[in-house]
Image (cartoon, rainbow over all chains, first blue to last red; front, side):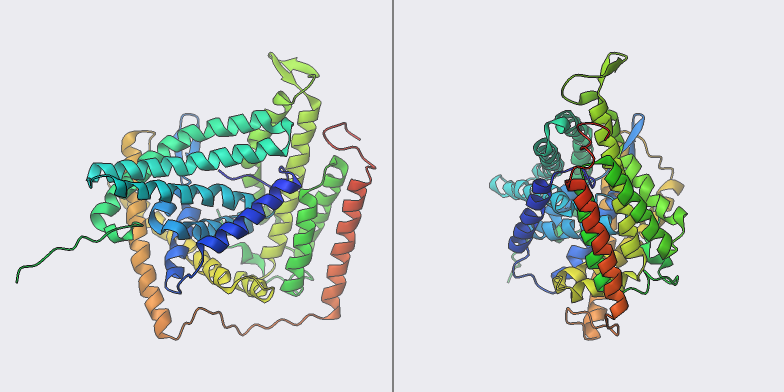
Length: 210
Length: 262
């Protein structure tokens, strides 16, 4: 989830921007012109996914899908999330202009961790069930990481926010479960329809006779 | 929800006429100062300043009210949590919950600042066409790649929202109802997957078309900016007001929100 303007202290805001610049510089190195449209599509998906609400009891939870962005774009996911966060702040005050840095580290960092988890599947024998499992775990970990960073940002901003930090962390648990199921299902679908879209996809080479 | 934030950029006003580069720089300075305010009276004053700026732009208030709604939903947890979880001696108890005025004041401060900032953001990006704002950012040494991608994404957002509406209609007509169960979630996963594939294929077609028309990763524009004296006067005004706000806040004419009302 995002954090809004006017809550965090100056050092936390500065650390957010610093972290974003460093991570963006590292993950966007040697970017090809051809990658631009693909990254933009994913950041638009991230933007729109944040608007889809699913009813849960009396309230509703919106998708975050930063894990899915990581699973599809790999290291470039950070750029996609960053764009999404910037546009959300510009267009309708979702988050805020001064906390763009913190939100980027929070959500983009989650996407990078999700990619890392997703890549771990190569260490195990190939099976479809396993890939779905890793997709689901990647989706969950992306959200969980964001929750932890959010709680940390609140925690370091002052002791009056400690209880809110705890609440924020707890609120991520249902979101995490939903994300795991949705990302798992989405990976299953993409695996069947367009496996080349997933990050780290190794094309199977079939030998033909002759 | 409306995302065409530049819907009212055609209205004549002195904010709309302002050189976008200088407008972005000076108002962003204001935003950052507001985000760091610590006293309620100064925060309220900055909210009034933001309201005045919006008033000058002539953007209808019902348009701006949309973003305020988002902020209210966003900050609701803080309003519910802070007064009841503030460390220290509570003023009184409501149904056994300790209520602390300090926490309540803090949430009022946060809310006031957030609304002021959102209003100012609306004034910045609502008063010029979005592509012109982006070209202004490029002129302000924002990385070109970033500006390119923001423009692409901005375009896709509208395409996607239309696409989602179409796909939703198709799903509804096949009897799909959104519920909190496994089936809904799995269907949503497939929905996102289908949306992704359709979008990727559309994008690669658009991209090939752009390449064949000579796209080389740069935005060439007919727009050129020229700052006049008036633009600098407006910027000077904003900077003076901002510094004054910051000074009153820092000089502790008023006590910070975590200590007392004034």
